[in-house]
Image (cartoon, rainbow, N blue to C red):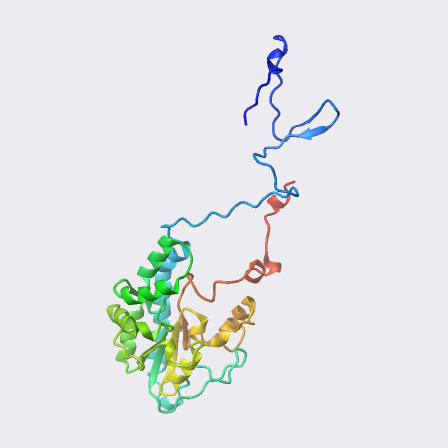
Length: 325
């Protein structure tokens, strides 16, 4: 900020040298004995003297968020999906194919009396084998809808999603590895069933999208189960309904709720939810009946405060910054 000259400045004697402007950090003494330190503030601090936190820059409309860059554009996400589907195919084709007594195959759907610490399963008897998949971001990439979301910025609109289901069937793509694996599973005589939270009101458009992506054929109410096809709530009721007719030998999804609604319990903390996947009898199911796909864009996994995501005893602060006055 420039120095404002007053009439007193012009009355200085020509022989007297002007003092240099004070610099930030410099301390000088006034005529009445007060010491003043010069700062580099360009605005007055807020009441109480506490500096305001820097504003978080808003997302630029039209830019692609990092999570979308990863899921929809990166080779890494493609490789993860291919890896998951290769493991699923190896499990279904390899392990189950050579079992002489198919009646002893165990379903991978947790029974009604299960808990996350004590999961229970039942043998299938003579029910035909099936694999159950979620749809969105498990077998189908919603490229059109997410490109629109990237242009608009954050925020989900249910009405816009309904319009997307009705008009975006040609703007989707199969998840890498999904179409080939699903075709191979069917070729082995195993039924493929989709269990999705999509609405019955747009069922015809969902069928069209699946078939255009090479994931069909599907039959509504038999191999395509929608959120209106059972009691309201999560997916467990639909899973149990499917399990009455089929022996579900594998499941694929991008959210933990695609395997059990117990993962979505409101009283389950972020750390407990994570630990349950690795430190209970659930752990052996990953890659052996349960197969999860990457999705950093949306869902129940995107939550948790600093101390929930980073345990306090593992948090680190740069000592070089801590030493600064």
